[in-house]
Length: 161
Image (cartoon, rainbow, N blue to C red):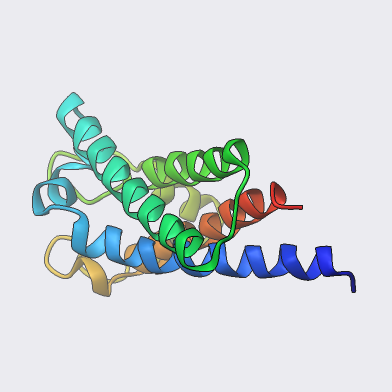
């Protein structure tokens, strides 16, 4: 294994770790109650609430990545970094438009995907309005986001080699 390969692996690991930690903070601590409740509404206000959530979430991730770079001296390629964050942000927005909302009457985004993949039974477990973090939809939502964090970290690390 070459030094370049080891450096790329280390960059990927650092990026994934930072993105994962920042995702958890941004998705649960930084997201406002209004954003969490409104982001799934099938209205312009719902789309705006979701966009605001994704912007603050992406900002949280940028801070985490910046801290890794500051502390370690790691330098990343700007276009690759932007591409990774953009892919993550778009995937997050798409998934979060499925958020539970009393105005929602049709299946959307992750719910439709879960149905196509025969995961709709798991997706429907629990009460999304009273206990949203203890549901199948929450587990599938978070695993979707983590999978895209992995892809974003690969993209970002791709610019370091």
